[in-house]
Length: 347
Ligand code: AKB
Image (cartoon, rainbow, N blue to C red; front, side):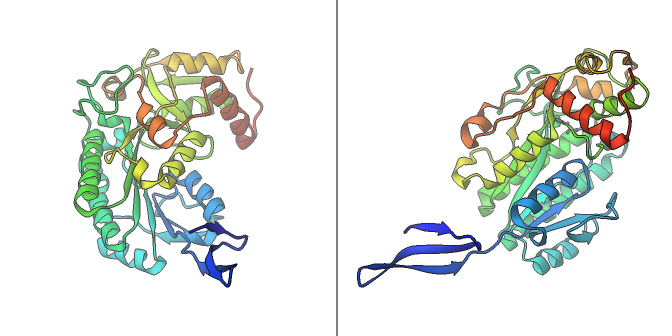
């Protein structure tokens, strides 16, 4: 059977042969209806925009309850993800076929409020997985490098290795990954996961993470020329520019199902650097920039995480590839943030 998509989004089946002529037969293909939870968080804000461009504004439902921009254009549902019945109604109402379940509590907030981290990262996720089975929807799980712990090799951390995290966030992410694998094996659920490193974006600031310094440093460099970092200067962690993260997130969801061999979550890497190294790169653009280092409780979290990640499975199996290295990412961040903050770079 030969298939193609014509300009108005209908699938044409060229297999109809009548009296030797090949008559194209049109049939409607189902548009994807996509739900993004945590839609106004650090990843969600940019993912919703990218999905709207790809699938059309009306096919992307943004679910969130905080930081909703007053000028948001698109399909908006206000609320959290904890109420299973409400989520069921929402999936039915919009005939959802894909769920990017981004609503999550990050590492530093999770240490301050472990119960909240468990409720959102595990209980809400389990509800979503149950509903996805019922509604036959495909799911994206945002996992994290926080699944690793002090017993994991810290350099070039393998895909399959020790997972003994010492933070509540890490515990919830390992549990989430295993739940996803279980639902895939038991119910055939199509679920795909990424272990995100620290993400760096100029559009939306992160909140409650250990890697957040790598965004805050840019704001302070532009606004004041000084930054007081809460980590030691040599704390190397895996990081990624948001453009790469969005590209990888959509790519894994669009990959053929048989390419997704890992049912927990894929290691994904781009750049690894320390506060000292990113500060030196910023200094190339802002020569007077000064960074000081006073470690707080987040140092212990960072010390339990990898310094670099082996993501060869993602590269081999579904074609992951990053575009931004440290100099390119720093130049982009400063260019966009300078405009956003309406400031000249301080010298
Ligand atoms: C955090 O720092 O908690 C997150 C993460 C690495 O998952 N950015």
